[in-house]
Structures are given as structure tokens and as C-alpha cells.
Length: 209
Length: 209
DNA sequence: AGATCATCTTGACGTCGTTCAGATCGGTGT
DNA sequence: ACACCGATCTGAACGACGTCAAGATGATCT
Image 1 (tube, helix red, strand yellow):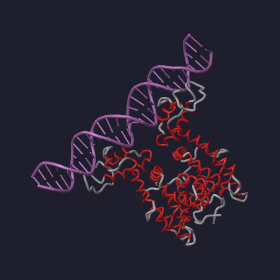
Image 2: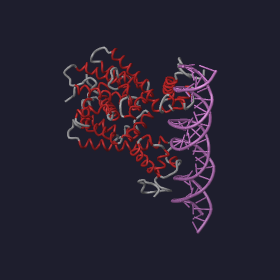
Image 3: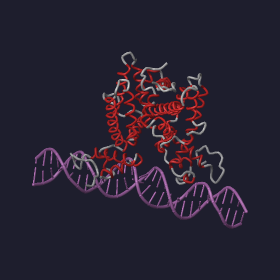
Image 4: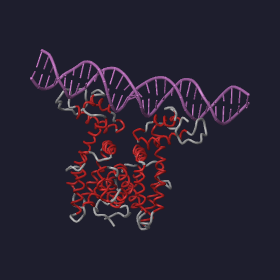
């Protein structure tokens, strides 16, 4: 009764604390934002002492890494779903891009943690690297399919990077209040997203002159 | 002799502490990175007590705002210089974009503070809004010039937002280690930047089909 | 010179991340 | 059944942080 959590099974000692901590962290992120996400607050939310997390994570950064990992998994599922929903081959990249930005808008605090973890290490997170079914590979393989066989490998890679940068930039800046009048002029949030992504050349995987 | 700073004139009491604090903060950012930027460290670096900054800034956030403001001024100058250096009308936007991303690479800690301040308020910082000679206006007016008279206002605005998102995304992600092989394949850092920005449609201010 | 007021210092409070010695408990071997 | 062991958790502590209230300091004005 002490913990408010989702902890169900407790295979050893007091419970599956590792998962409970990650869940508690996500709950705090959703409810109170990134600035409230202290290790002590997470322990408090999970109903354990401030020192307990150190038996499951080296430090706060490792806990955040675990939270970010969950986030990347969620984002990957979201993008995979968008890919499946795409009406046409040409719409594939746009649908994926829109789902990416929408995810960042639906989980802004989580998205921020995800990218802060990456930036601290100057690299995309583990779950996104070149292993299969990573989000990065999803985008690249989609580009490969859309581009056809006569596009060079380097251009596919380039298009993937460019699309990722564009989506990330829009994810971080799309909420800025300065853009509100423009959004209204275009007919709402999603129309705005599609317009910006359209501008950003998500369609042309081959390098322009 | 106590302060290591750039403080020259000291118009009242003990010195131009406001400027000295901003300078101290920038020095810490350059030398030790954003994680070392505590209010107490800034006061230490400026040679004053931990409470002294509160006579010039409401809280830590306001000090960071002041630091960010300096950063936006520097970035604006950098972009204006790049615009002046552009060889042709068509190269204008690319040069500005490259200078934007290069600034973020030369001052990564400062750039991070600049954007963290913006994100906390969900808007571009004061110094960038619709007043003349803001960086935002610089980009928009450049787009207007490149686009010619027959392009609609909403498309110019859209192109500005899109370019900004692209540049910001590249600024934050361009340093990721995963992209190193791609950079080598393209012939170095700057070639990589130009290739990505080229992909992102910095040239076409009119909406694609 | 004396009063005034912005400026700066001192000292304190609560919170944070982290560590460490010890309490606790599940599982293992006998 | 029982003693043990190692994994797990607690309690207390440390230094650093942001912030605040009260007092000292010193420039400026009359």
C-alpha cells in the first residue's frame, strides 16, 4: 500500500525495483516535468529510501538512460505504426516524420530526457544504433525503398541524417509560441507539421543540384 | 587582484558586477561546460559571495537569460557576416545556415544555454523576436529577397521556420559520433554540413507539390 | 559630516547526488 | 531445521546547490 506504482510481480527481496524506478521516473516526468525529476523524488515515488536506486543503477545518469531507452522503444513503435498506416509509397516519409514530431509533443518531458542523454554522450542512444529494428534503421530503410535502386548509398545515409535533424529541430521548436499565428493560418497543428516537413525535402532522397 | 575577470570600469560600489557575472558565466561555460555552471561557481569566478548575484538577477534563470542574450547577439553577428560574404544570391541561405551550425559547434555550451532558456519559456528569446535586426528577421528577409516578389507571405514564413528547425536539429545532432564515417566519406565537417543543409531544401522557399 | 540607499557578506535552510556502515531477508547447503 | 551468505534495502552523513533574511559596507547627496 506504500507505493503508488505499477509494480506487480516481485521476484526477489522487495520487488522488481529496477522497473518500478523507471516507471516512477516516467510518472514524475509526465506529471511534473523534467525539472522535478530528482533521484530522491523517484525513490520517494517508488516508496524506497534515497539510496536504494544505487543497487540497480550506477548513478542518476544510468537511471535516465533506462528511462530514455523506454522512450526510444515507444517512439520506434509509434513510427512503425505510422509507416504501416501510410497510404502510398510517397507518403511514407511524411507519415513517419509527423508521427515522430507528434510523439515529441505528446511526451515532451520524456523526449527531452531522451535527447539530453544522447547529447551527454555525443551519440544516438544504444537502442537506436545500427542494429536492426532501430528507429534509425527504420528511417534509412524507408528511404532506400522510396528512393529506388539507382540512388547511391551515401545519399540514402545523408537523407536519413537530414530527415532526422529536421524532425528533431521541429520537435524541439514546434511548440514555440511565435509560430502560433502561422499554425492558425495553415489550419492547425498537424497541417503546420506537414507543411514544415514538406518544406524540408523529406521527399527527395537524391541530392539537389 | 581577487577577480580573474575582464572587469575594467567599476562605476559604483564594487564594480560592474552584472556584466562581470555574465562574463564569468561565459568563461565557465567555455572552460568547463554547462554542467559546471552553478550560480555559486559564477559568483566564485567573479570573486563575490554566493548571494551577491541576487542583487542583479532575480534568480539563476535570469542570469542564464542574460548569458543567452549575449549568445544570440554573437550568433546574429556571425550570420550577418556570413550573409555579407555570400558569393551569389542563391548561396545566401546556405552560407547563413552553415554559419549558424558552425557557431553552435564553436560554442556548444553557450548554444545549449541559449536553447534551454528558450525551451523553458516555449518561445524564441527576446532578442530574436520580430524586432528588426533580430536573427529571425535576418533569415526571413533573406528568404524574401531570394524568393522574389511572387511568393506568398505564408510560404516565406514557413520557409523561415523550416530552415530554423533544420539548422537547430543539425546544430544539436551534427556532433553525434555515428555520423563520423559519413563526414569522412563526404570530405570533412563543412562538406557534411553543406550536404545536409542542401538536402533540407534551404534553397526552395516555395512549397513543393 | 551625517543620512541614505544600493551593494555586498554572513549565515542559515531545505534539497540534491552520492557514499558507507549496518539491518534485513530470500535462497542455499547441511 | 538451521546457520549462513549474498543480494537488497535503510539511516545517517557529506559536500554542493539555489535561495533568503539580516546585517555590514561604502558611494553619493545635501
